[in-house]
Length: 256
Image 1 (cartoon, rainbow, N blue to C red):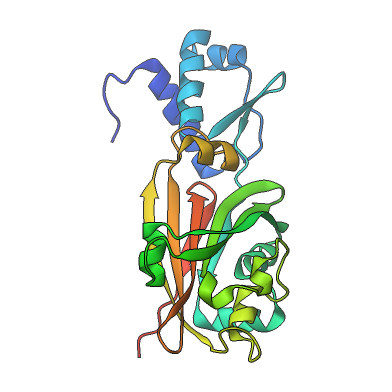
Image 2: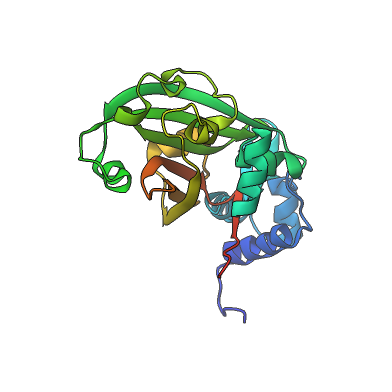
């Protein structure tokens, strides 16, 4: 139902938004110039500029200096979480994120930002079921798809369990951390039997906005993921920050 007496810039913004969401204006497509849009809608450049500013704030448009205004390209990874695909990918040594992105024809990359031992923050300690301030090994990574930042992921591991292992090295772990956890000769020697994820939606901090190139008005999903082994102990907590404009999640829950 249309809203009566809508300001002219809102009508233009709604029209362009509908074209973008329907795909009539494709990701990466350049919009007409402000002068052309002014003539098309029979209005002023000021009004057109306000409409474009509104759509930029919604994360639908981006400006490129000296080039114009474009529909924002939005590489999107549809993440599927099941026990079966974890086991399948565990055997190949390819992470779930990399496998999902590659299966969708995208080019994934993971970069290690830092590795070190620190005192466990309260929200991490409670999930690892250790005392706040206990030493944990923190591995901070950034995930990219087609060179665009997609996630910031911090992994936390009890130092009492993983100290002296390759987890402390600032290098990729062959087969991933899950391989180290389940290795019969490793520090844990048990299978991962359950993941518990907690999802929180909020607006990004300034540093998250900068690191992930999040447009104004786009919220961020923060996902805590705890990995349980067969004894019930939590041996890994992942703290992921994910822009909501470039991810989809699908969970398959088998009910016995």
